[in-house]
Length: 156
Image 1: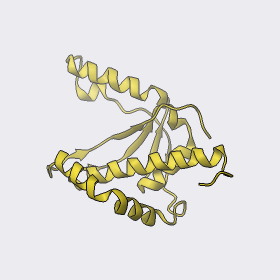
Image 2: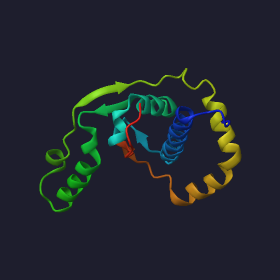
Image 3: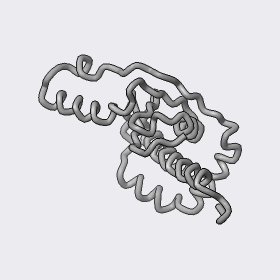
Image 4: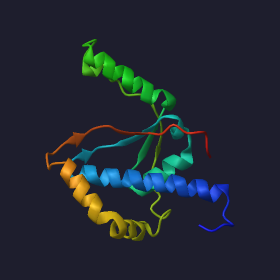
């Protein structure tokens, strides 16, 4: 970025940086043997189609946007509390919200996505691999529903 770039470019750069951080997290999960069936975007930031498109493109997988997504984080916490207090079965408590839209990845959006990842890996890869490998074992985990929640001001 240069000093002549404005708010729009800075906002996009921040969103892309966060998306690439989520991409790193996704890779760590996959490296541990986890299987991610689908990814949902919840919280206030999920109101933005642009944010969903950036995430879908960086993660290279469809991004599911749900009805009433702003309720997702609070509803998830309430569901966990209900489960912890044995107030119903998993099937009764954790019913899936309606799907508003599925945003497909636009692989042309980031023609140099692999190059960006390689630069990041070159600069931070060594310490990241040591750190993450010390946290996770190779136990195979299946992740049925992976949600990304970011509370933000509205952006377009």
